[in-house]
Amino acid sequence: MAPVSPFDEDQWEFLFAVAARVAPPVTEFDPERRARFRAIISEALALRPPAVVGQIGMFLGVLDRAPALRYGRTFRALDPARQDAVLRWFQEAPLQKLRQGLWGVKTLVYMGTYAQTEIAPRLHYAPSFDGNVHLHA
Image (cartoon, rainbow, N blue to C red):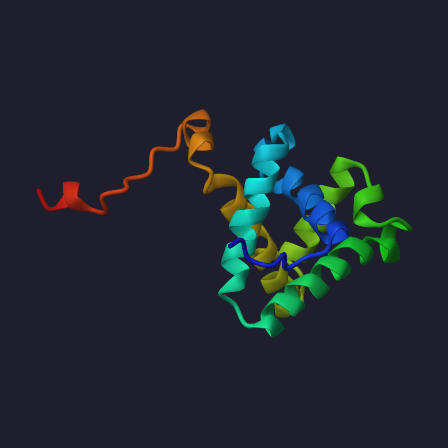
């Protein structure tokens, strides 16, 4: 049985908008890969306390709306260069909670993207699935 979705459709679409900036392969995802992206993240968040999942959902809202204070537009309405500037600001924000929130979102994006094994060869990523056996041989 698939886990319950931690986000509503608007939050998922926003997460894809962020993912397009931090993990560009997401922009090439077909509907099947997008569904796997969502499933991987949903499974990971199903293991977290509901309060943590709620905080992530709340942070997605902050990340989407905060740029309106500076640019008069939400994150999704900005051009890619300004989206990158917003993400850099959050990454270097004076408040630790904002930096942690962005790193949490980026971790979910990376997980949903790079945990799809067929993407790895395109990125020349060759993880070792046998641990560090080669180090002890």
